Image (cartoon, rainbow, N blue to C red; front, side):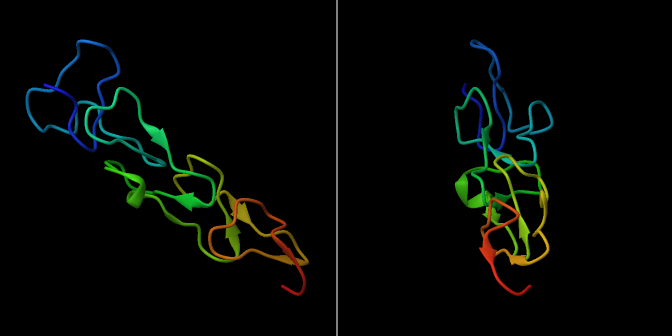
Length: 99
């Protein structure tokens, strides 16, 4: 049996006999599709604060005023002074202007 969604099997030949996500739960900041060997980082500009992500939809847009790097389980940081960051930003100097 292959790893189920929200969990992964890190070694070949490892299998999950039951949908027990406590065995190899997908970490926060990543997602695990069914039958994956390794978790996949959420893309830059997104965040996933929960464990057990089952697909790209588990990665939510980084909130406005902040930025998120790939694999973020929380916001990476706030925008730099003199800049503002739109939702989904991946750097602290997204747009120059009045904050």
